[in-house]
Amino acid sequence: MDEPSMPSPSVAAPGPPTPPVPLAALLAREELGLRRIAGPADADLLWVHTSEMADPYPYLLGGELLLSAGVLLTDPDRYVARLVEAGAAALGFGVRPVHESVPEALVEACDRHGLPLLEVPPRTPFTTIARAVWRLMAEARHRELRRVTRAQQALATAAARPDPVPAVLHQLAAHLDGRAVLLTASGEELHTAGRPPSPEAAAALARLGGLVTLDRPGAPASATDTAGGTQLSAYALGGEVSSASSRDRSDHRTPTRADRHTQGQARDERRTHARDERVTAPPPQGERLALALATRRREPGDHTVAGIAVVLLSLLTAPHRGTDAAGRSAALVRLLLGASPAEVAPLLGPEGPWTVVHARRTDGTRADALTAGALGASLGSTLVDAGYGEGDAVRVLLPEPHGPAPQPGWTLGASTPTALPALAAADLRAARALAHAEATRTPLATEAPATGLAALVPPDRAAAHARALLAPLTPPLAGTLRCWLSLHGSWDRTAVALAVHRNTVRQRIGRCAELLGMDLNDMDVRTELWFALRQE
Image 1: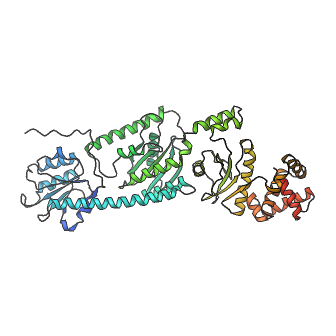
Image 2: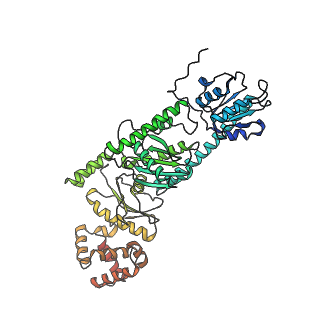
Image 3: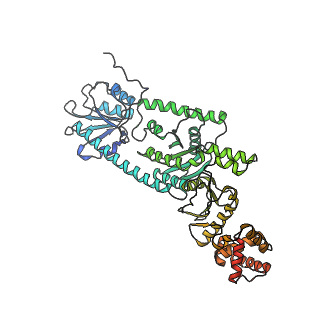
């Protein structure tokens, strides 16, 4: 009799929408009376199938627990070899009425080919085994959904923290029990969390991250590999997460025959592309980022959890790749080529007025570019200067007439809405407001221009009087005096605001009194000096 035609191995069979069931979990169901008598102890079950064919190979998808009573069993070795070739996970052999016991030749064949062999007692119907497997799958699915839900809540909470990118990576690494890295296209690690992998796995992870950040059509949105027993995966931020999810079903099934064929080709292609990339690729684009993961094993739901993190990280890093990047780039070029701020302002957003915000982390740590960008996104602006020197404040330009709101984990100082020509003065006022906020331990301080009686004096006359009165003072002394008066003469708070010792504040204020020839304890003197200092 001719052999039945086999399905084409080029088409992968869809996996079930549930995680695989470990063979050990099925054997632990004592009411079934199953006993493993040959083959390895570890196997993942995706399906249960019953067949009495002499060669069921053409009708297997891979991952099955095949149940048979051996009605047409004539050549155990060939029978087992064909099951292994088809990707069957295990064989359950029912004793009686066909066979009084499991044939010894079948036991030896399963040991030889590495296929788990289960003895099914006469009292256990095959349908009972199938029902038990489906029940175990439902329980596994429930556990997976609970795990994914907990991870989603933790990641969302982390994304709302003042340092969202490191916080998301930390939670991701904790839930996957591995390493999470934010990589640039050149392989630079911007942020890391979790246990470092071996050098071999780290190098392979960097190559995998470079693959998904290739700046060319057809570049994959995600890729997976293994190195030294470590499971590796990389995801392009801002890519099509849904299409990546449809391509990667590793959470819920073991590879079928077609999967092993295509995955082997894909792995070879990835390695070839990685080698080619080191030689022929154009210079990497720093704004292209990838999330790379290294874990000891892949658990059901890992890909879903990673997908949630990809979405959050794409949103958090979006200010560096926003659609208005071209406008900002054009504005910078025009400024460098001699254009005035008024000429380039329309490229940056609304006409104004603009609010300048200075910010520092409340815990004193320095904010990197991604964390500063996340602050800007929270405030509603992509115009962010993260600062590069130690102690530099993050500066944000808000093209909105409304002031900023306090941000958890940040101390903010803001100017009032200001027209474009006066932004330099607004920047100075925002810096002073931040110093005041830090000294008074308030989350947000705003320094407004002169109002009330002070606003009744013509600005030119007020400025002239201020210049004459404050002429003896150097800029550092005038700044110290202004800060000291704004904090009601508090030595300690002024020292905090200026980041100097309180004795330094005392010496500077004493020097101011000496140069001005005034008694700074006199309220009238303080009022006049405050009026003059406010004209700066």
